[in-house]
Length: 466
Ligand SMILES: Cc1ncc(COP(=O)(O)O)c(C=O)c1O
Image 1: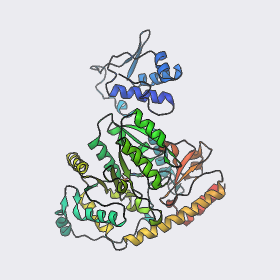
Image 2 (image 1 turned 45 degrees about the vertical axis):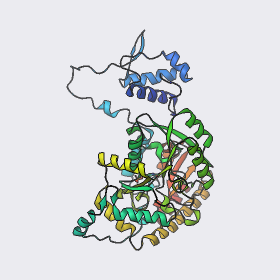
Image 3 (image 1 turned 60 degrees about the vertical axis):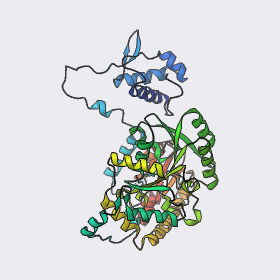
Image 4 (image 1 turned 180 degrees about the vertical axis):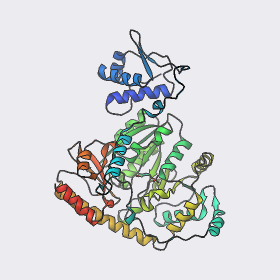
């Protein structure tokens, strides 16, 4: 039984939502080859839209070959392919089309801008720290023979000394203890998320996450066939009423959050917000995935207990070195209740997505470097200074840009009135990350303030003055 209206994704414009729904119904074989679709009028009624919106969606699906319109008798799901005698060449376009998303179209504009104006561009669209701010850890020496010996200290969960280092760091920072928990090393936070979804969910299962958020443009959910439901972010964390409504309407299994220096807003969820979210998740038996990739950058005075420390048995915690030592380190980790940890390990092995031992040994050396802690302290101070300068420039030169100054991290999340802001700033050679990438409107953008040295900050000021 197809729930045409209930299953309609929350995508705008509406015709795209209809296109997406029908495409997924065909892919999931809920609509079978040759099956006749309800009439356009009927679909317009169930979707509560104009008939022209349905016509546009069906036309799009027909032109991509998924539907065929037979005049006088209606619209049908295309039959399975027959032998095609006119050409022996595979039509690769069929594989390539339909993969254009808001993310990929903006991302290609960003890539193009970087390629074209490499020297003049003020790049506030980056996801990570610039090289100059990444902790200076000197040379991490390892001789090859020692590395071969170090390999013997590896377990299924990863390189044992690295696991110990990370466990101790979490305990020292008072984030949580690892009693009855498993810690396994992965190839970064994204890979951790993929592993968790692949190991614990089935195709068609549902997860919820905040919107705007980094997860909005993640390709992972689609890759594993997971349905996603965005929950609006409000000034007091996520909208609990909407969360409850979504839980009551769909079988949400996981809630995925990035509660410390949320990407893109930079917010830290307060303890009270965390407790409210936990309560509702406990009431409805929903597990939480806590993505804490920015946790390194929080000052001890602003630190709020992690979800993991508040409810260790209900939360899977993920973090990585990407936001501190650069994303190419590809080292992350998962802390999960033991039974879940075992399942994750089995799947990790089965899929052969075990992180390189060389990277793990290097990461352990980096984390144990004697200047590691002082470098983080310096980094936080430098980030605070950058944030202050950029905020001042924006306050002064763009009084109609609204943003709250986060307590850390490296992003400012700006809201203003111009829907063409991405393009208009690009004309001044200023690159930002547009709101739609995070599921927000075009009037929002994210600005990475860490990325600029003194000269560039002056340039930023000059260009915004024009
Ligand atoms: C909230 C969040 N989680 C995960 C990631 C990806 O982390 P990794 O590079 O470890 O896969 C990012 C990167 O921007 C992020 O912002």
